[in-house]
Image (cartoon, rainbow over all chains, first blue to last red; front, side, top):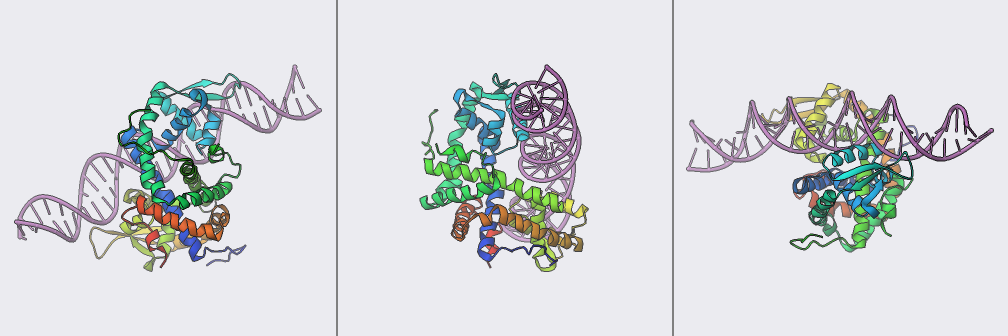
Length: 166
Length: 166
DNA sequence: CGGTATTGCTTGAAGCATCAACTAATCCCT
DNA sequence: AGGGATTAGTTGATGCTTCAAGCAATACCG
């Protein structure tokens, strides 16, 4: 063990047990979400997330920056994703009338059909693998834990969670 | 809303709030782990995880299949990762004496130095972004929630969590 | 024994995320 | 008004993950 400048506090057994499980969930969950959506609807989970976000917006339209923040992604990632969705005719882009720099993304009617079609299977999957695995008490705890973590992971509080519970 | 065969039960507000936060954590955490390790030690989080696992094994050696399961990854992913680590001289591979099909991965001394060097910064980061954000009570809750989720996400219970708390 | 199935692992191609670099429009300050 | 800084977004290259396919060794079964 090398000399450790500020004396790192190693994780105690309880902390380590929780951490190991969180890491495992973080590794496994994306695959579970992606493969169901890919198989049943031809979408990645991120693409679904983007479409779902748009489907709930007024005019089914949102600015790229807003969409990126609320899907917890970088603008670069979103830009590539929207280009691919546009090529498939699920979304269209147009410059914002209000700000010449901004681009708006709008769900097409084909895009709307795709999300609406995908939603039930996705929610079933979320229940099967996550929500229904937890007691109502744990659902509440997860909410609070999520808030605590997001305050650190995303200090500027830009992500969707902040705006979620109207 | 299309006809929905088995009548999907949509998420109620409490469920939805917890789910949105979990998704956000799952999206944001990997980036936080990767960028600290990449910056300070030139490793991805997954590479660090592999090296750390090996560093705690007897002979600093493990079979590929075991290592894949305990890092919550597919064998393909591990195979590519180990090849890259081998090219960098952090790991070496050799056929298992016991089973002609199996391959063992062993940490080299250079690999050992790299993990030992990376560990303090990584743990600091985990504390800063996760563990220290939670109360001791929440750490316990997260442990239990993790178990409940992993029972669904990994029904065969192959991942590390199962073996973690000796 | 002999053949088939299974297990363990690797490989190459394709797709997605990330990083750095870039363009363009607006803001801000004097 | 003019110029630099900031904001919004895109693009191309690189690297990692996944998927499909394949090979080799062992296990199983008649």
